[in-house]
Amino acid sequence: MPEQRDALTELVKAHVGSDRRFSTREFAAVAIDPDTEWAPGKSLIAKIIGGQGYKVTPKLVSALAEGLGLPREIVGAAAHLQTIGYTEEELKGGAPATMIRTLDAAGDTPKAREVAERWERDARDA
Figure 1 (cartoon, one colour):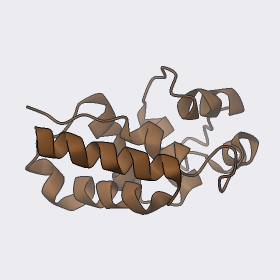
Figure 2 (figure 1 turned 45 degrees about the vertical axis):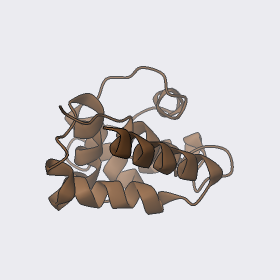
Figure 3 (figure 1 turned 45 degrees about the horizontal axis):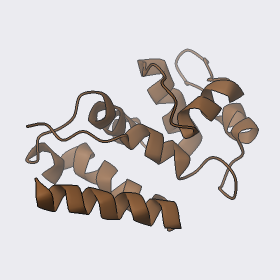
């Protein structure tokens, strides 16, 4: 059974919002897809960190990677985990495993720790 989390949302939330590295306005200014020069607006960024529904697209993944300063394959792995899921075996190596470690290290905040602990509980209970 594929494992699925709101990984892309959590990755962005770890860096953007109140008491984070970027405000939504600041992040929207730096999150630009280098190939198309498309950038998500401040309202889309707010939807993402607010946990509201949004459409994951290749240009959004590229823009988020640029803004976060992470390799695109890591942000792409978060998008894949959120929209499709991975098997437990797939999460053991490569970009998916690196993405999970990145999420764990993205922000040592109470919310980040809560998410990491929930994921660990879910993995043990599965």
